[in-house]
Length: 207
Ligand SMILES: C[S@@+](CC[C@H](N)C(=O)[O-])C[C@H]1O[C@@H](n2cnc3c(N)ncnc32)[C@H](O)[C@@H]1O
Image (cartoon, rainbow, N blue to C red; front, side):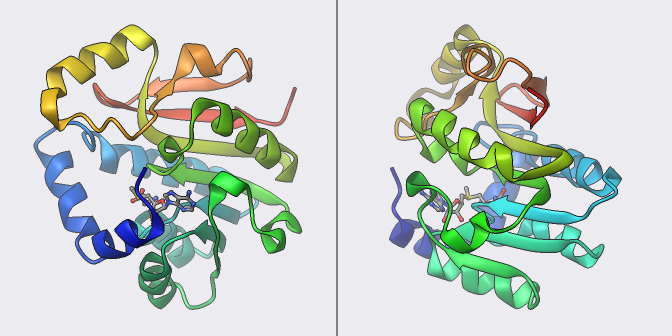
């Protein structure tokens, strides 16, 4: 797994490298912009505009939401990512913390209309994902929703196919979402593919 230092080093080049992979439709970032756009539209369609971003990076998505008047909270473990995002969103409450150990205390005190996580939670094992999502669900306000945009597949067979196509480019350290496996822990989770390797997972706190 990449540690916080590795993300510090990637921070200044991050937007460019993601853009290149998205434009040529290749794994891992094919569909990135469409996915972020979709989450943007969902979040703004809520009446409430309090948003928690897990692993916000350079703030590509949250900055757009911030500019639309959303109250932004976030957690990331990279000091450089936080510095870049905070400069774009001076009023946002951004905290440094490793989400493999859960949320920082300050963020547990609030309730959120939308919790978003784009291309970040694949740094958790499947077991850690279930534990973390279970911790996040009670922090949603009524009608709130968790939006996960990431490298994600409907089935393990689809993941295997993508891995074969990616060959040496496949990142062995990342643990991608497989919807029909995760749904066993969260029966009301929904999945919408946006490219051959990316999709939107949504989760509400309605049992
Ligand atoms: C690939 S970037 C995604 C950034 C942004 N959400 C986006 O969609 O462009 C992953 C982000 O998650 C953060 N991250 C990865 N593992 C983390 C962890 N265990 N705890 C906190 N942040 C983490 C990294 O520092 C980085 O900013």
